[in-house]
Structure formats: C-alpha cells, structure tokens
Image (cartoon, rainbow, N blue to C red; front, side):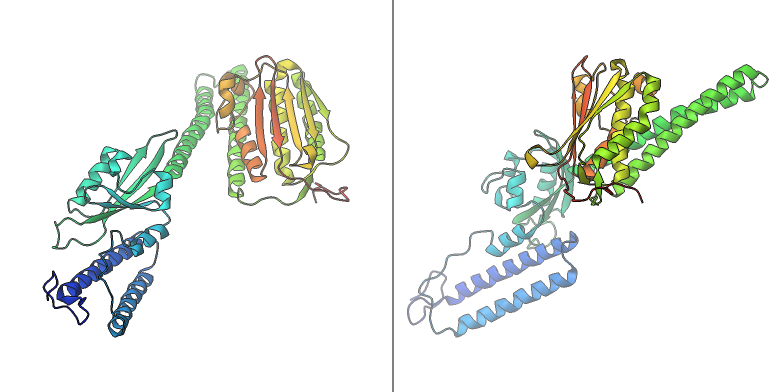
Length: 445
C-alpha cells in the first residue's frame, strides 16, 4: 500500500517514504539558510564577530548531523508523522529574543508573524496583525514594500508621534535568500528597530548650545570691534570719549571672560558627571563661607542676607568646591534678581524622619518668576528676563551649572515662585553622613 506521497510503507504501515525524506531535507535547508541569513545580519550590525557566526553555524550543522544519525539508528519507530512546524521556528524566535533591539518577523504581505518582547513594549504589536495598523509613516511603508518585492536590505529613519516624539531607524532585510536569484521575492522579512531619540535630542542640544554660545560671544566682540574702530578714527584725539569707550570695552571684555569661565566650568562638570563624590563635606560650613563672601556685594545692592542654620553639622558626600559654586550661584541670584525685596533668607535643616539628606533653601522676596518660565530655568542660556539678566551681567549658565553639579551629587533642585512673593530655590540631598568627629569635615588641605 502506498502513502499519499507515493512511497512504500514500512513493516508497521507507517514508513516515511521518499516524499517524507525530501520534505525533511527541504525543511532543514530552509532552517540553515534562515540561520545563515540571521547570523550575517548580526555580523553586519556588529552584534557578533564573523568568526563567532561561523562557529555557531558549523556547530548547528554538526548537531543536526548527529541528530539524523541517531534517528536512523533508533530501534523505536515513530507511530505517527509530525505535522510541519508553524513559522517561525523556535530557533528563529530565540534568536529574535536575543537581539538587544526590537525585532519583528513579517511575511511578504506585511503581516506580523512574530515580535520579541522589546518590540511589543515599544510598539503594541500582536502576531497576525498587519504592521501598518501600528506604523504608517510613508517612508517606512515604502521601504518594506521595496524589500518585500525582492529588493535588497534597506534602512529608513522615521518619526513616531505620540505623547512624546521618538525617532527610530528601521532595518528591513530578507530573512532568507531569494530561491531563484535576484529579483525573486523572499517569503519573510526581518525588521529591526534602533531608537535614535536620545541621539537626536543630544544633537539638537549641541547645535542650540553652539548657536547660543556663538551669539553670546559675538555681541561683546562686536561691541569691542566697534569701539576700537571709533578710537582709531573719529575719536582718535578725543580724550573724554576715549576714556568712556575704554570703560565700556573693559565691561564687555569682562562679560566675555565670565562667559568663557562658565563654559569651561560646565564642560568640566559634564566630564565628571559619572563620578559620584565621596568626600565628607559639612553643608552648614559651606553656606556660612558663601554668605560671608557675598556680604559686600549684597550691601552694594541694598540686600541683607539672613540665615537660619542648625548648630550641628550637616554632612554629605560631596565635592566642596562644587557645593560652594552651587550656593554662591543661588544666593547671588537671590541678591541680584530679588533686589526689590531687600533681603534673602538661607535656611538648612536635617533629613526629615531620618530619611534622605539635608535640605537647603534660598529664598528672595522680590517680584518672583512667572510660572511659565519655571520649567526651563535650568536650560543653558535661558533667561526669564533677558533685559534684567544683561543688566546684572548674567551669562545664562548659572542655573545650568547648578543643575549639573546637583545631578552629579544625586541631589535635586526644586524651584517655587509666586508673583510678588519672590522665589525659593531648594536643594534636596538624597544621602547624609553621620561622623563622630566632624571638626575637620569640609576643610581644604
């Protein structure tokens, strides 16, 4: 009696026959071609080396050969023929799950056949749904259509809009070589996503930073150039004009110097952002030193600096010089921009209920800051009042420096303000240190 594929049955009536053998060989060929294509893709994406990919492929072939020989030698015959596996194979799923990026396997109609956990987390995709139900960017869809029609692997960048905008790079590639050479369509397409959002944001910050820094430097430089030309020409013999111009030029040069100093300071802080300070520093002692240093400047502005500090030290792991920079910026800003309130209050207290670290607040009693400006005050070169900032010779980098220093110290900056009631800048440390002898804490060698 013959089976449906025309091969003779075995003694027990369940012989595999020639058709079954050919089917198994075709499945094995498809599996190894798929495996080779995925390994090649991983090599091209620099996920594994070419040597490792070759070893993995060779090991897979060897294991398959051992399995086949063992199966032929086994005394127990299969009692039923197993149906062909449903795509994708378990090995392909495991390889998709091993990728560090979202990965989706599509058929050439664009239907999702499998998605790893990262893809499901980034894009709510379910197997069986067309991919265009979730992603409809024209460039994205066009790239898939070209690859599904037999074209080469292709990548495309697209913007995914939602609560927040995210940029992705999509990589489409045939999962196995076209059966009859170039121009033939592949049965399945692998799609790998790379999140470019952080890179795009960093590029925008860098471009904005360079543009703002160039503008801030160009303004005083243009002023200096103009006065130099005037002194070389019409005001060459005018002693009164020359004296006045030299004073203005000195102010502009000083402004440029402050800006360059702040830029260098910000660069140094960013270079050390990954290094958490560990030196014990008494916050109370730092604040007292800052207040003493700023008293003359405050008197010139008609402002009184008041303090409400504990007698006991408040010790945190920190970089003393950077903490001085933080509190000097905050107190000086309070004196300058809260000048109409005539006083600045600096308070410090220990951790509440023994949890967290010390909390320091700097409050002025001036006009306050409009609510719409509060979320952006720590951005580089952002000014709530440009005219007042220039009048006070601000560089627009002070609060950005404060934010970066506090991030390095694992501390937070909170800003509160109401119109006519001034503004409060609060520094909340997350850790504190208890030392039996703090007499030498925070001293500079």
